[in-house]
Length: 260
Image (tube, rainbow, N blue to C red; front, side, top):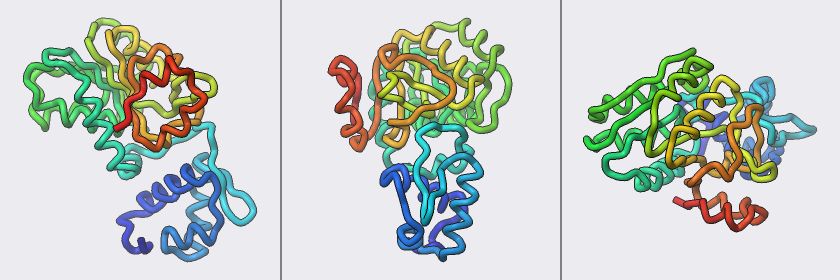
């Protein structure tokens, strides 16, 4: 793809990160070839992404950072791995049963699930995501409850202690969560912001079934705020590129993974 084919700098940089997570290291020449940009543009993108804590520059290129310290805004993350997210959302939606009360947190993959479930009149929805709320209403959801709290722009959610307390006022059949990292070495899911993590912890507590939706780029990573052990999650819905990562995961946990 040539550089001019990217609609925005954000889209180009999202593609660069996607390539880096796949290859772990990229040199400048590879970045030029893959993105169709000049040396100056490649170096400028690397500098900007390093400044945001999303990669580490090395001599002649860049390497991936496994510890998630910052994340792109939702508008950029929506453009990353869209086909994988669509397939994951379809598989996750199939796990929801007629008549369920469904908690959906904020995230680009959980947003896709909300769009698919919204037309079902038998479902009741609870969410802390402003994007998810808009998608539910736009797609015909009839019964929707919005959790209040502190607005967090990075994922367009309502979080913090107020939101966590509000979540405890509900009991749902299914909770659908997006996360920043699935750390198979430590055996935990995590997020970069404790204000987000404390709400997701409560969502797990009040749900009969918890589903984590995460594409392969979220695996073999860690993030600041631990949400829960992998064993507390009922289903992980991901794409087939995650399979090699799971070789060291205990068989009891591997049974929880669904590949879209």
